[in-house]
Image (tube, rainbow, N blue to C red; front, top):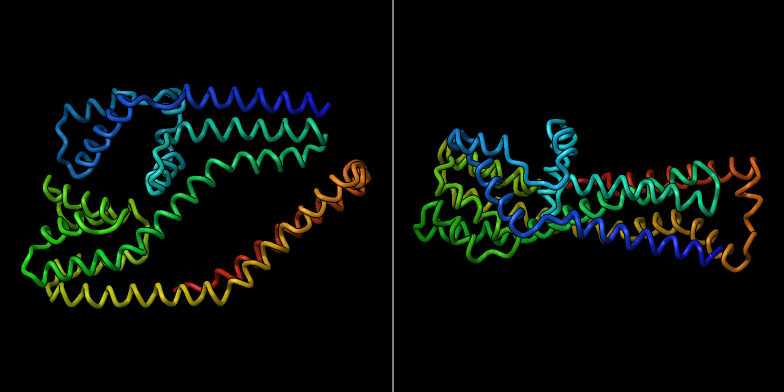
Amino acid sequence: MMLLALLCTLVFVICFGLLIVAMTPSTEMKAFQTRLDAIAARASVGEAPSEAMQLLRKQVVTRFGLIERLLSHYAPMQRLRNFVAQSGVKADPNLIIVQTLVLLGAGYVGVMFFIRIPLLGLAGALVLGTLPMVRIWWARRRRVKTFEDALAHAIDMMARALRAGHSIAGAFELVSQGAPEPAKTEFAEVFRQQNYGIPLRDALMQMLDRVPSQDLRVVVTGIIVQRETGGNLVDILDRTVFVIRERQRIRGDIRIQTAQGRLTGWILTLLPVAMLLLINLMDPGYSSGLLHDPTGQKMMYAGGAMIVLGGFIINRIINSIDV
């Protein structure tokens, strides 16, 4: 039985790997998609010619044409596209949907193959099915944090450039040449959009859409207000840098003070599951009554629900402090 299960798992992994390789866009397709994204960015501000708009409507640049046609106009699909773009991961949202559906089915079938309990099968399906989105979420969170760590240095460079007599466009160019990634790439995109003729306000708002950072929102708000009402932009940027660095310092202090609570939450959430698995590995059949008896199943469902609820409450308590 164990050999058969391992064989089925191996065949599934090989088939899924071949599916991913077959569905991966080619180099030419990625380059074409990049060109279309640039046209779409210009079209959003009314600068794309009608021929380009016809190209955007007719051209299909994905290997998941059916999913593209069915879901492209719905709000959840648009949010998924924005989420993937904010993560910086070069992934097709349609491929993420396919991966999610495949993993949902694999999780349910895999759990039902060993333990014929429908609710556990659904739980296994949800755990595996969320892996693609967890990957995107984690990459998005890491990219935003990296950007916020580099933002203070980038704004400090802008203030020094303006103090030296450069224009704001020249300041963006200097930041795009010397700032750490990903701030370098984002400010370079703002500089390119300004060269294309896009207003500074629209370019900054698009950068804010690509990087959902509260610190960046403060910077963008300060620049836009100064452009519309006047004032000393250098002084505004200096004060903004001070606020950003103070926020980062306070957030670091909060993480240090709440480290024990976070560790406690992880231990209390994962320890019952880990102990159940270890005990059954050392003594197979130990939990047979819990898994197959109706009363044991109800107790297991109640225990799982309380573990999830406890972990959620601990997480809300720890993350309730916002700076």
